[in-house]
Amino acid sequence: MELTSESFIKLMADQFKSESEKIDLDIEFRSLYDWSSLQALIVITAIDDEFGVTIEDSELRQANSFRDLFHLIEAKR
Amino acid sequence: MNIQGIAIKGISATIPQQKQDNKELDWLDGTQKQKFIATTGIRFRRVSAGETAADLCVHAAEKLIQNLNWAKADIQVLIFISQTPDYLIPGTASQIHHRLSLNSNCIALDVNQGCAGYVYGLSVIGSMMNAMGLKRGLLLVGDTISNYISKENKTIKPIFSDAGTATAIEADHGSNMQFAFGVDGNRFKTIHLPKAENDRVSDLEMNGHDVFSYGLKEVTTGLNQLISEQGGPSQLDYLVMHQANKLLNDAIAKKLGVPAKKAPSSHYAYGNTSSATIPLTIAASLDSDTFATPKKVVLAGFGVGLTWAAVHTICEKIICLPIHEFEY
Image: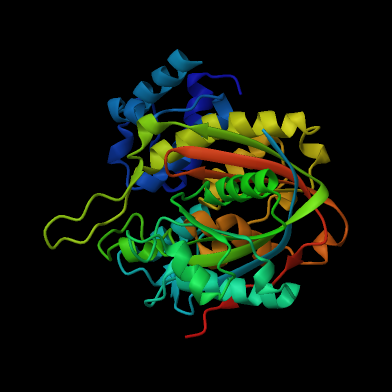
C-alpha cells in the first residue's frame, strides 16, 4: 500500500477498533485504552503487511505519537 | 544441505491431562480475553501436573513403537530434544533409553533446543543414521515449559503449554531431506530463563516483539528461499510451522504465499508447546490417510536462540497416531 498519512491513519484506526475515532497523528498511542504488549504486536504485524516495513522493538520504544511511528515507517521504506 | 536415504515413518504425541482455559484467566476482563484468544489463537493449554518432558516422550514412544510393530532391539539411536530435562546431569536420553528397554548397543544423546528443535533433531538423527549406516532411530522432542512460568508471569503464561512427541526414523533409499538454518545469537536473551538465585525459582522471560521481527524478517526470508528452491508455494502440500501464535504464523504464511489450508495449526487446543509444536500439529491436524500418497512438506521451527530451521521432504506412508493423554 502507498504510504500517506491518510493510509497510515486508516490502518491504525483499523487496529484500534474501539477508539478508531480518536486516532490522529498527534495522539500518543500508549495513552490509548487498547494499548498493550499484545496490541504492539498487532500494530507491527499490520505495518509489516501493509507497508512492508518491520519495526524493531528498540525503534518502537523511541516512538510516542502516531506521527513518530509514521516518520519511522517513512524512514525505513 | 541435504540428507539422503532417511525418512520419517511414524509420529506420535502425548499431552498432560490437566487442561487450562484462557477464558478463565482472572487478570483479564472479558473483552481482553476475547482479544487475546482471537489474536494468538490460543484457547486451551495442557499443563504438567508433575510429569516431565521425558515422561510424555516415553509415553508417546511406547505408543508409536507398538503401532509400528518395531522390535526395540532394532532401534540404534535415540535423540532427546528438550529445554526441560529431568536433570542437568546426567542427560535425559540415557534414562529414557532405560525406560524404553532399548538395546545397550544404542546411541543416546540429549540436544538442548526449543522452537526450532524438531527440525534440528531431524538433521542430527538423519546425519548420524546416514553417516553410520543405521537403520532405525527414535527422535523424541518435548518440553514442559509450564514448570518455568510462574503464576505471576501474566504475559507468558497464557501462551505456553506442555507436550512430548516421538518420531520414528528409518533408512529409506528413495528419501531426501533439504535443510536450511539460521541463527542470531546476538539476540540470545530474547527468550531466556535466568539462573535461579537464592530461593527464587527461575521464571521464563520473553521479548515478544523481537520474536515477531525475527519471524517477519529472517525466518520469512529463509523459508521463502527454501520454498522457492522447491518450486514455490503452489508445489507444496503442507507448511507445518512452529506454533508461536496465530498472529505471527498467519503473517508468515501470508508473506510466503502459502494459503491457510496448507498451513495446519494446533494453537487453539494445545497452545505453544515449544519444541513439540511441529509433530504435535501433524498429529492434531493430519493422519495416516493424509500420507497414504506422497506429500511435499516443509517443516519450519523458529524462536529461542534466536534460531530457525526448516526442512523440505516428501512424506509418504507415515503412521500418524491421534494425540494421547498421559496416563499416570
